Image (tube, rainbow, N blue to C red; front, side, top):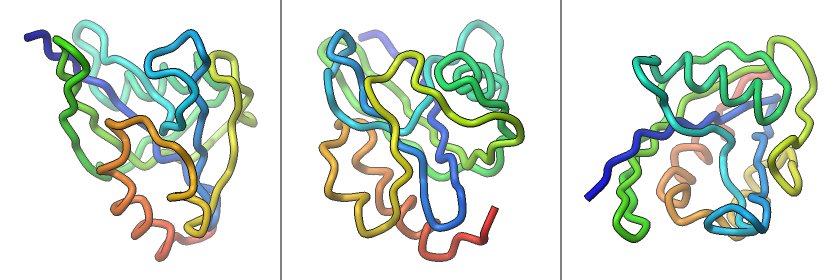
Amino acid sequence: MKRVRVVAGVVLRGQQVLVCQRSMTQFPPGVWEFPGGKVEGRETDEAALARELREELGIQVVVGGQVGVNEHRYGDTTIVLVAYVAVIEVGEPVPHEHDAIRWVGRESLRQLEWAPADIPLLGAVDALLEGAAPY
């Protein structure tokens, strides 16, 4: 069984969070996720998340506290998904690798078709949005 550590950014802006739709060439295709990617080599989670958000969305972020952790099995690979709060410091997100991006509030969060690994994080993100301060 292969284990892969993946980081995700819960990018907040006021009472909304940034979500990204996976392209049809990614697995699983067309579902929504919190942006991020694999931790490489000796990177810290925070460095990996900052790099991934810069590469995928063209933004520089400040990475904050951990939101949650979920392990999910895709075939013979288990991903350990660790989500962190992130706040944009520079830039506006542009979908370089995703089919679409959206800012969504609590009312829309659960109306999307989510990547299975991200679903267990929705409760923690919902709670964050409920008490989110304007950024």
